[in-house]
Length: 375
Ligand code: NAD
Ligand code: AHE
Ligand code: ZN
Image (cartoon, rainbow, N blue to C red; front, side, top):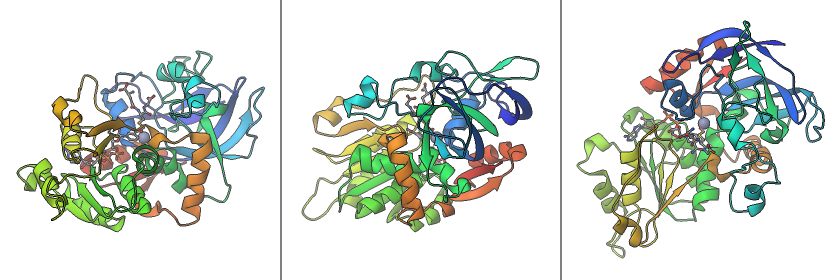
């Protein structure tokens, strides 16, 4: 079949809207009509050329929602008409990682996914002249129709609006999951969130859900403050307005009883390695945990004095919020539908596919939290 897609032809260039060929689903695969997709900073990271795994031409996008149109041989868990959210972290429930019970990072198809290919080592997308186009993060939601492995779709309830629940395909789950699954934040905790964008705001709403007392937000852009307050931020720091962000956090978290200071939990949602170090070093001596969520460019490395770890701070990472996609995503959709979490105010812009590059401009200018493309 043919479908309309925004194609990343070259690193650093705007996406180009075009008709592309899409082969039907093979064994163990499903064809999905994408109804809506968010634009995550990671899409921009790969589009820019900073991603060591970036391949061109490819169809980016990994934060979608849609309807199953056709299933390939052997598919048993979804059928045409089912509403689904594509999963860049699949859940096969059979690999060593899934069965370990210790991680959400299913390894069943990670190697081919990183090469822009389906699990059988081929691509379903091509240009009209036959040039192959690569898949992205196993999802390619910047195409109106896409083919996904069965293990990479979460079936969700049919009354949930696509233009909102697409955000659960990455940002919402990543932020809330990092708090609940990775950090396991407890009631009364003091936390710091570096970067108040599409991920950071969801960390904030996760912290509110978990019952944190103090939620300090840090962002270079003061325009992010009102939305963060709306989601539960209690204090704000603009790094440009203080001498030393770490010292500022340490003093803000001191109490008469605890003169050491430092946060119980800190979260990097910027992808900046200098910020990651600040996040670790503003965690409390003896027990503070710092969770790296941001994705850093090719070649970037983190550093700190080992003494920071010797004295009990813990550095951890979180991918897709530690969520097991097929199990957890339908529950998060329920939380949204039941009003336990909010999504709507964070979707600041909706766009047509033709205008997708405007979504990247809005991200760069700091005007948007999430732009969503509606097909
Ligand atoms: P975003 O562009 O919406 O937000 C980033 C925010 O960080 C902005 O508000 C920006 O002003 C702020 N910021 C940038 N540099 C800063 C600095 N030095 N100090 C303080 N604030 C700073 O991006 P997003 O969609 O929220 O994504 C955030 C990061 O998370 C990206 O690196 C993205 O690739 C990554 N990400 C990771 C996962 C995962 O599973 N680990 C999932 C989704 C996104
Ligand atoms: N390709 C990058 C790594 C990118 C990365 O870390 N991706 C996150 C999800 S970001 C979603 O917005 C992730 O899930 N990582 C685990 C994995 O297996 O990719 C690089 O640096 O090579
Ligand atoms: Zn993402």
